Length: 131
Image (cartoon, rainbow, N blue to C red; front, side, top):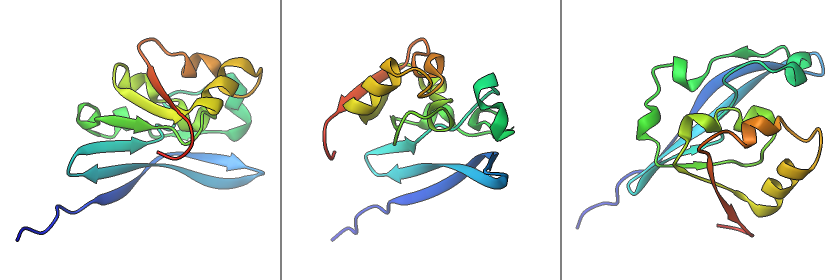
């Protein structure tokens, strides 16, 4: 009998931010599953004036030798700018996000960096409840 293929979860540091004056690392997570490679959140890839108070020190996936093409699916836990700022790197691939979160990010002023949510080619798959 064959053992099931292992599933691994790897954190990847993509930025250091300041939160309430204290350094805070920002990680995304890669899930290697036998059926797909899943990226949970995409971090930030560039500075933005709305986030200047976080004094971001960026380490974008695209500058770490990370295999962007090897990602099959993206999951955004939520759409604050520090979690979805790299979504544009995965244009055309499914990005799963809660429907209410997507609605809020697209309608509430100041919720996030909207142009990062609405990046060209980004394809959201809205979900309701647990998936």
